[in-house]
Length: 392
Image (cartoon, rainbow, N blue to C red):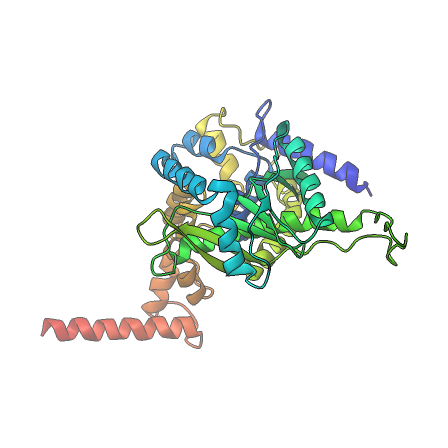
């Protein structure tokens, strides 16, 4: 049996072949990882993201260009709002953290805001870990890390992630801060946008937990006074809080408002999905020999390659995946009920296509004892009665 190191090397070579010769890998970011967690059943997205395929270029080559992404206006507005929240050394941001996440702590009258500048993502990741270690070694003060860089192992490769901010509390615990430009109206945000932000923050929490675990595994320095060491010879790992701070504009102003969001559920789902990404090896092994997703291939060959991997399209994909228009077209051509939404798919049980649903409603097929079939026939009967009454 090959060693894990050999298997990892073989998988990386296989993913490079799927990407195409001389095609650089597109790095995974927190948005992509959060989207994976939102649609864990999509093997197509798992293999494409795992291989580092540029899905926007792929969608254009397939003839279904993506409209996915933020407008330049939204980016400019978001950057301006973030700069306002972090002005004056992050005084307003720390006030919101204290108010919403840690009201029993000492107010943050002053805080450390270390410089995280370094060369390349690896250098910035090391610098961030160093400052987190420094903050953990000197509890009792607030520390604000502005745009730290974190690394998360994904299918054997590091994904470099950049949260808006990480705050170290006086008790040494760590909190993630997400700053978004969509508004909090009467204290509530749009559920879909808030859910996406929570899933994204869950990715950052997982990456911070890896940093905390490494710090907790480091040998403990001898105590100055007694020279005693802990029984395990290591310091306890810093605690990563599972309540994150979501900062948004209040109503229609540019004033910041904040809400504490418990992301334990999103964290569990994301961790489970990232663990399942090891199945990329199984997906890749089941692909036809010579499969390649390079946008340079002829359209027919590229379409065949993409269609060789099953997808799990749902309308929610339109806001999270660059291939959504291509997958929607195929889903409608096949008459798949998933094109109607995951809720409809769940209600219809084993009926996978619109034709099967209509046939069951007409009484042509289906088991009458099946609750989904019985509900469809009852709905069809009620519709017929209503149309008959309307025509009288």
